[in-house]
Amino acid sequence: VNEAINVVYPILDDLRRQGVIKAVGVGVNYVKTAISVIKDTDLNIALLAGRYTLLDQSSQDELYPLALKKNVSIVAAGVMNSGILVDPKPGAHYDYEPAKNELVNRALAIKEKLSEFKIPLTAAALQFPLRHKAVTTVLVGAATADGAGDLAGQPVVDEIKEAAIAAAHQHHQLGGQAVAEQRQHRGVGMQHRPAGAALPVWEQSTPVASAMPAASSLPRANTSSSTKRARSRPTVVLC
Image (cartoon, rainbow, N blue to C red; front, top):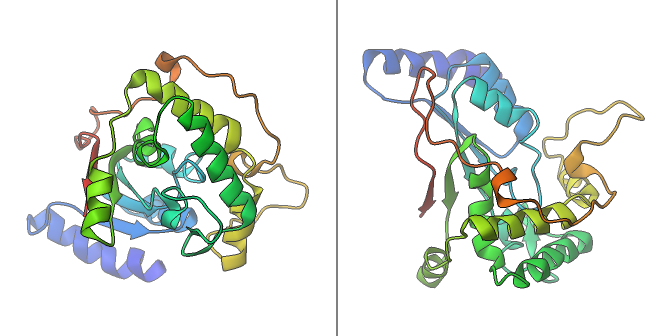
């Protein structure tokens, strides 16, 4: 990370000033890394995989506010968390390895709640990140042509159905200790937490009420900014 900030970035910044390139960005899986780079550089864009999904919102408390403050457009990738939000079942993968049973059960619970409103889990997972105003693009990929077709054919969730997405997320996601444990098992991006300190909201194990919020109260994607660079229109990119 230090080499990227102190050696690579100055070269790219100079190329941008010369007009050779139009933008400078970073692509990572880990919140802590993204925060370090954004704090110490002047990026246009940051791609972060798997950290703002129906199962994991570890980017929202510090990274996304920082991105908004510095006008860095966020590309949310890995929104299916390695496949568990496509087909949650025993053996499904989360962050590139078999998911813990608790994670599978939570994904299944979200899927069941969404089914009450006739919302496919995959459609909700695709569109959930765009609810945050820091996110300008959702990037997804597929291993096969059929998989790409399935993703492209997901229905657009209208404002009324967004409330159902929020309710499903709110009711089931906060049992997120398994997310933290699985990331810690892999040594992934865990910030040091003093003994006895409160868990951040996405890692708390206490369930919350499942009352459905009004659609008008949900965060909406921000499509414009008066700061130094115009923010992109929210999009979903399939590759």
